[in-house]
Length: 254
Image (tube, rainbow, N blue to C red):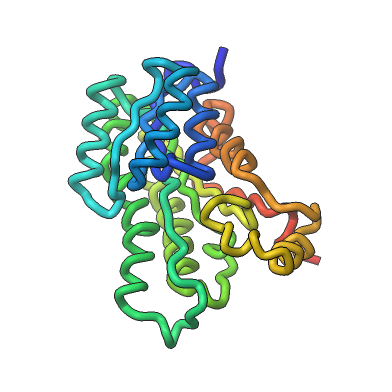
């Protein structure tokens, strides 16, 4: 018996990193998976790997999370192929330019980051919730960031977008709790993924990041994926509106 037997999950940004690990883990635990990504090469590699292990359990779709028509298509394909949508993992996101303080940030860069991260999460919830209401239940997991709680210099747009995800999550949890739809957010700290390689590939920076973490190592994609699995599963049936921090103790208050 898998922890997600009989469930259908839509996972965005599934071509690499945390999203790919989530797609693999969810399929292993019995879910039917709709994996979406903008990167055709990454998505193709994921489908090649998972198709051998989980035939007929995973489909892949190209997906721009900022486009409402794309979201409509994704949900239609998920329902048409697997009959329903039980789970949404809003994983797709971008960091944007990291070296600019607020006064140097362009409107174009601000809009780009906010659209992918905040608008993308909003559209995902907007379009899966009607299907979940028809099912009589559902679980949405929005991948935010530690910066969505504490903010971070040089990442103004990113921090703002992840903060928006945090509060959207709580609002949606209140709005749709009566429909038995749970909505939670995950806030990773320093996780080694392809998107953070620009930091972790520098030995001095990597050492400094590790020094800030009480556990003295960086998180891996599976650390986030297993948390998403728990929140998506019926094991978390009485958890909604929660923000789960995964940071190796970085934010422990003295």
